[in-house]
Each structure stands twice: as structure tokens, then as C-alpha cells.
Image (tube, rainbow, N blue to C red; front, side):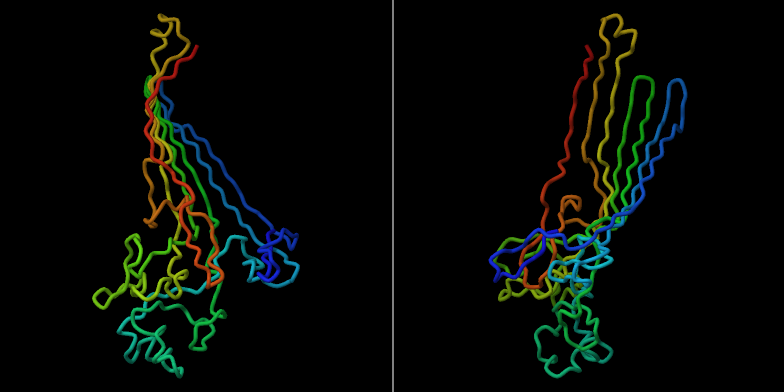
Length: 303
């Protein structure tokens, strides 16, 4: 593994054998012939897979927070604050989280971090202050399960194939928006006195990178994608024999025509893992590649 080193060493990391990682899971496949008639057939191929990765042992016999390694957890985890929303004006009166909880600690009442419009993260250790002790493992970039299904329909000389792929239970990070008005940014639902959003804190032209910006950016990366649709027409055998051609077919192929996901900023499949640790990090995640939608028309000639 790549182990982080203190910056004073002159190196950022070193490759060492520091523990033991276990992977266990199952993969199931099923092929069926649903309909078989002289002029029409329908077949299905299904693959379902589950893989559980976990760190079983570390040389320190304890979690290595600096390297983001946690015993019993996968390698690619997100360790951060739990984002609860945005402080609202209703939180400043009796019964509100600011009035009844955070403002009970001296100094919090005038602290800019505990005001309406600022990000609200969970105080897990109950000391009415947000510190590193309030961070937890929020989830993993690894999906809980993946699956694919391919359906093939044939009618006389036509063949239609539809391939669908799904990845569920993956946690990803949102790209960091610019909320100070200095640079272009994608559209987000941010808080304002007239828009009490719980997605992003209030913009501020004096703050380039908002407090708890990483915590505000975790998203469910689950998706279902129609990976491929193809339609093929094969010329009849009588015609091919007359022309003395072994095979000839025409096809239309559509790659990545549809994507279904609650994550709308980018293609969740192309967002790589990037740890949000440490809090001082300003490295923003983003797509590392693109799944293009393409249309292809062609002819296959067998000789």
C-alpha cells in the first residue's frame, strides 16, 4: 500500500506492506430462453455480483486516519463529517438546534459557524463543538452490488439486443462549486433568506472555499445505464446463396443512450475515488473520463 509520510520527510508517500486486505463475494449468472418459436425468440442473460472488501489487519493494530485505513472497512472510504443540512432561522428559537444546543456553549452564539445559512454537521461526541473527533466513516466508493441484463429478441431476419448495467450503493463526491462569485460554477441549490435550502450553505464573496465543503458534497452514486442497443438485419439465406455471399447484414448501434441516476451533475460512473481527508484539502473531485453517447450504422460482409 501507499503509506503517507509527514511533509517534513521530503516525500509524500512510500510503498510498504502494512496489513492485510480481504475480498469476498459472489457472482451469479443466469441464461434463459424465454420464447423459442420458428419466427420469434427471446433470450436473457443476467449477471449479478457482490464483493465485500475489508482491511483485516494493520501493522499499527489500530486505524490509520492519516492514510484513511480503517480496520473492518474497505480501502476506498470517505471519512468526514456527517452533513445534516443548513442552519435555518427556525433553529435560532426555542426548540431549534442552535438555540437549544450549540448556543449553550459560551462563544458559539457569536461564532459565524453557528448562524443561519451556515453548514450544519453532526456533533457526534456531544461537546457542542465541531472537531476532528466528530468525523466518521460515511461510506465507500465501492458499490454494494452490480448487475447486468442482456435481452436478445429475434424476429425472422431481425435481431434486437438491449444491454443494461447497474451499480448500486456507491458513495461519490460532488465537484466543489464556486460560491463566492469569482469564478464560473455549475448551478446548485444554495441557502438564502428567501430560499431556505438544506443542500448548500449561503454564498459569501469573502470565502473562496466554504467551511465543511467536503461534507456538503457526498452523493449517492447509484445508477442504471442502458449500455447498448443494437438492431441487426440479416439478408435472407436464399438471396445470399444467389449472390454467393456467406453473410451480409446491416446494423444500427446506439452506445450509452440512457442513464438513470439521482446524481445529475455528471456521469456517476466516471467520478473516481478521491479522499476528502484532511479537512484542509482543497482538491476537488470531478469526472476523469466520459461515457459518450454514440450512434453507429454499418454493414457486415462475410467473405
